[in-house]
Image (cartoon, rainbow, N blue to C red; front, side):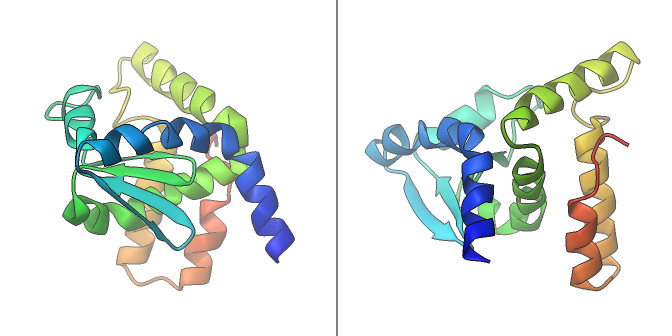
Amino acid sequence: MALKRLLLYLWSSPTSLLGLFFLHPILLTGGRARVVDGVLEIHGGLTRLFLEKCTLLPGGASAMTLGHVVLGRDQSSLDRTRAHERIHVSQCEKWGPFFLPAYGIASALALLRGQDPYLDNRFRLKLVMLLLLVWHRRPARDFCASACDSESE
């Protein structure tokens, strides 16, 4: 099992490295970091400014996943979005270095169809369906198995 975990970390490491670039500037500006269930969660400092001003969402994002690194505005945002962001971690473990390009292509395709590039992104739609299953108290094993299904269906 440890070997499989290591391989997942290696496969998704290009995206995780992007997240790690945020670590030192955030810590130097008063932010905090901790590992929760094998995922580095970073919040505060420059993270708040980045998530508020440097995303395409009106008003910004509460959190963002980059591989095994999750950026959050504050600890409350991380606590509130943890289940959502962990699905993105699973998607990144599946897609590896292709996750960000695939997510970008899915957003571009939504835009070309006249849809919202964020809300109608197929990765996000799959994620919303999975969270609804959990919310309706489906067994966790169904949730985890579904998270590994193809997001491009």
